[in-house]
Length: 362
Ligand code: TRP
Ligand code: SF4
Image 1 (cartoon, rainbow, N blue to C red):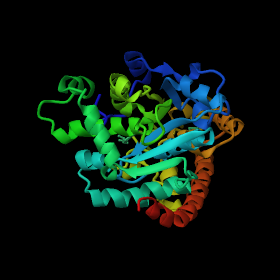
Image 2 (cartoon, protein in one colour):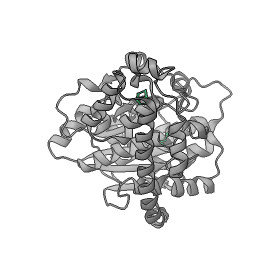
Image 3 (cartoon, helix red, strand yellow):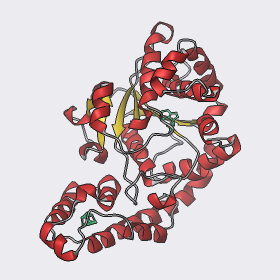
Image 4 (tube, rainbow, N blue to C red):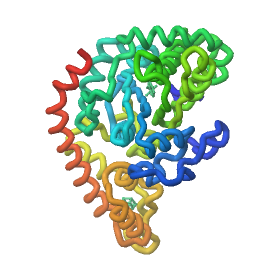
């Protein structure tokens, strides 16, 4: 599996079985589960139980993520922020790595561009979405600027060889060395919080999309190989489904028509919703008779992942769509109002956050 060219037409079941990922829905008794957990958007995990135990005992843990500053932030990326907020609320120490080294190596972004994108697109939106990046339990850094990170990555690379990299990532012999280097930086991102410079060994969780699983597997392996040196605990992970793009392909920053960007104007977003592919029928008559297919509708996905917080309200949309009572026109109208309200509010909060975002990296 190659995280940089991953396509979203994935068979989640198949991957779970192949790589030993557990079903998230088999985790019982989560206190105050968040929307993505309740609705099956988070479908898999490794060792989430260890984190649950810490939460239930009111003990601290580490939650780490990274963002590649290579393009615009879209509603799909928001899912990670929603999860970070949840872990933060439940006592997690949050680490956010800005993967400018990865963006340089795999997307051709200069370090200057990376920094600017990180501030304008990511950090200001993270803040606007309500994650307090200035809190003492939240650490934000640029990969390229952390000497501790780069030193750790170098140390860890000693116990990883080319065959393993090839087996995990499918690299060809012609791969450039930066591509080999970058996963080791990510491994170090995930393990750095457990070093003595930060919090020392502690249960760790990494909420990701399934495309990142190769990095997780490598990290878990490396953590154990260095157990005697650092006392690392293997990090756990959760996996969320990808949100479908508006045109029914992958939602992708590089294809503006597929995505609702957090910096889109409310009007643009409304238009995108109105022209999105739905799970509706060919004709009104047919839809009234047969009902729509919310399970194959990107408008419904927006509601499910982001726009309707109340489970009963969402269920109502689902049933009324299924039994033909709710038609796509009306449903899109309702959804476009919700997205407009959401983006308007976000834009105000983002304006208030830009300066804070700039200061975080200084
Ligand atoms: N590779 C991730 C991406 O493409 C970004 C990333 C860097 C990351 N370091 C990380 C994700 C650590 C999780 C944990 O988006
Ligand atoms: Fe999708 Fe709404 Fe149409 Fe149902 S009614 S198919 S949820 S747009």
